[in-house]
Image 1 (cartoon, rainbow, N blue to C red):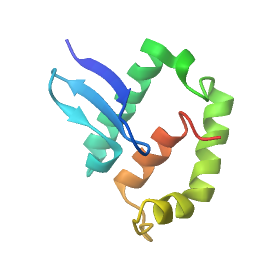
Image 2: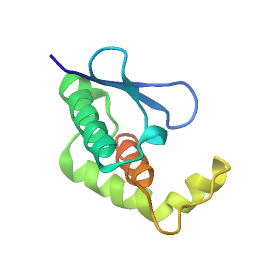
Image 3: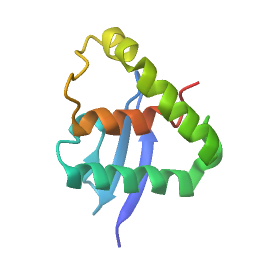
Length: 105
């Protein structure tokens, strides 16, 4: 039976998710393909099912508002974490955006 659980890691927006079999973890920084992104989205959904009430943006309207706001402000997050905003976009960018929407104000 798949495990879909995400835990907040100390520090920045680190989220460690168990996906599939126990011991297999994923974070926004390890999303390199469409399949990884789908697994990450399922993990985020599993995290919400398990403990969504702890999220800053637990309902869909707030989540989507936070997602849009984080995407608008992503250049600041990338700058603050010493990374370059991917000009052409990448799978990890969207995973980070989805993750940030769980807590971004």
